[in-house]
Image 1 (tube, rainbow over the protein chains, first blue to last red):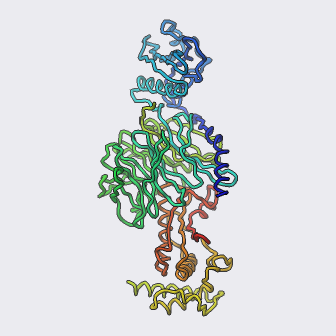
Image 2 (cartoon, rainbow over the protein chains, first blue to last red):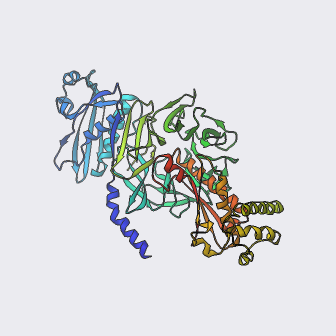
Length: 433
Length: 177
């Protein structure tokens, strides 16, 4: 009991450090043809204190991280217009900036702001879109990401995924003891929040389709169990704790079922669980390892990893089980699939010649393309708009996260000050309070 | 089936007794026989038990007992127990069969390469291989539980084969001893 209290105390003492742990993002491979855009620092309107966030800087950083845009450096901005009437399009044309973002922040009450922005077409000389969004101080970053989403969608035709989050697992050694944390952060690495801390491994986080819950595997009782935790309230429920494996949870797109891997019948097999009454249906049979199920976006099939052919490869079967079709043929190791939001391609771990890299498989023509350049890359997860794939890699013997555009042209790395970070999963599109 | 199992146990134990005849076998440890199972297995058990000497609970903490070896290593992407490690498993089987109140956790592990959940599957199959061998040699299913930690709890930190070969393993963990 004494030991328990002591470890609890250690836990509490360490907590502030963990909470500050932030992912810093560094672009490691730029993209030719990124479109120049100018994001002018937002002006202040009305009285009141200066807002705690630099909205324009957040937007510029979001657009740069997409790989599709090249925001001008702040010192290169030749003017600082705030209102539409102050814009001289000629100035921006000479800079080669195709688009211009201006805006202002108005203080409308205690801890109440109104953020107004305009996206302008420099060459045509007019407004593409403009909105006014309310925010409290702690919603300012989120609102900035929402603005980035709107700009991205207007200019690319594809929804933006900046106002989303990433869940991941961190492991740290503190005083010779391992600590595992399940965290989530904004898509730019800010606002990290710890959902769970344990002395035993945590793994395989999976988002519910509404982005309100995370399923994960915890070994906190020195055996595996699948839990579902509400991201907002922190409340959780144990979903599966059978003998042997309880792993690889994956939500169905309608949120009503969960695919899991269990070995309660003596071998790793895939089951689907109806969440209303936890009724299980076994989907795979045989002596092979069948695991890592992931639901197709149309809810009709499940892609999974199996070594039934002698080496781990990806297969697809109907959601009710039955005949499985092999999807991967190149290389002796293909596992850990994620399906793109449009259902047309897979991101996977491809092992060949002793290297494990992230690859994309086009499901229409079966073409496999290597996207990452690490040696031990794993856990790919698509952004909800399909534009990027986040995954785990290592650098300097430390686990870090990286992201690559789904065409492989653009790469970035998310580093943590210390510890290992892995198993990133990108949230679906969510509406946040 | 029962007969085949008994015959197999006899065969394995007889073979192992032969293997370790050069070693430190203490013949005629009568105390152990009292713990042994079905009457039909008596002859086999008696001849086999000698191979492991003392099978009392105390032998668990004896560094010279074959029970001191509690880790079995595996090849890449394989869950087959290697020929030379079968004797380790058999020693634990004899001990567990003789001490039915003792429980063992069979913990499967893998190296860090490839997918994490697939490695959980691999660790599970490694643990199941050892479990089947234990049960086949007379250990009651209730005495054994298995868990796979996959690549989550490496024995050796490191990113090369020297570390990986130490991490592809099954550990036999005696609960409460």
